[in-house]
Length: 115
Length: 110
Image (tube, rainbow over all chains, first blue to last red; front, top):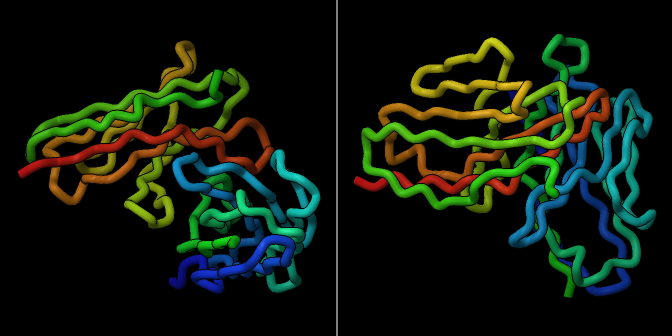
């Protein structure tokens, strides 16, 4: 079974630009989650999408946004990039139809560097 | 106070040793508990879910104490390949949000 996939692996942008990160969940999983892991910091929850709708949002400014498509894949957009947005962005998916629906499985991440 | 607290370590142990990690959480409404493992510059991988009755998977045993709000992970017969950062993770209610501890680093030496 294929795992969560993310693209691109690495992304280099300059301040003020926009970044788009993509995620494909495990087949059959309907929920997608986004996390940020900045250097030396723990993982911070960004967004949760389920069945195409935003279900929860972490403490991040509105320039972090995203969406989920009908095939359950997801996109994270970061507008007006700032230097401190440089981080590893991790996507996870879960199967909410099972009893252990909260188990989340992570993709390899997109490493975003803002210069 | 952090929502999930772990001793960052590092824990340096010889091969074959038994090592235990503890984790405390502050929100008594927390409902789901996990241990993840993260290797350097890699994504976290689910190690095991933690149930009130405790659970075991090979050399790994996880325990949950709701009254004291702590979770433990015991690794028996440590292998070199167990060297990694172990993350204690909690979910409160139906938020979908995993709350991570800062991780405990384990180094298993030959």
